Image 1 (cartoon, rainbow, N blue to C red):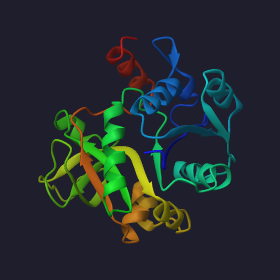
Image 2: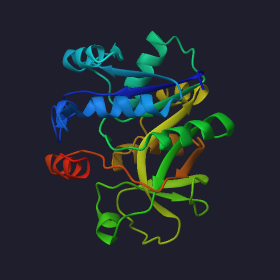
Image 3: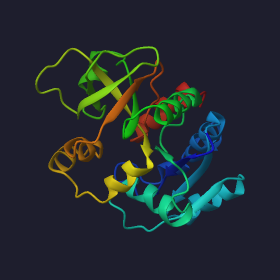
Length: 244
């Protein structure tokens, strides 16, 4: 899949957990875990894009491709697009936007998403899985996705909605969304030129911009849900999961 590139946006100025890309798990910075996961997926070239010299230097010292971006981007997707447009010269047909805070993502999950993006007619592909328990499902930090059909064992279905709180008490076809996206070339170009939508702003969910503008998002099921590290408490959890 050499017509595909994985771009990992990363920055030090996260509001909830500043400097988290450089936090160490098993004596290795979190961004390096994510970078190596992307490489292990073996679906295309891997790039880290960041406005911060510390991150860029770390990636380069470990043999990776690092791209410096502007600081002013509103979203990670905007940062990904800058790298795709200015540095990769839009040469790839598919771009995977992989978040830099999921150090225990299975490389096979990226491969599943890449294959679907290449073979399907959706604009954007993403991933989801089952919730661990009721508390996990009610946690507003865990994004939910509603799909048109039930999904399991690598099956994909069209996304109908994304939300943090289940205000309508839906019970069927609700899954734990995972923030990794595969964009077709035309889709990422369209997306970044759209204005931020109402529900995107209200829910603080980038993907709502795509849905509100009638872009087709397919959601694929994976069994193992990676932990997204958003707080220091999450870092403690991931260290336990990955052997500290």
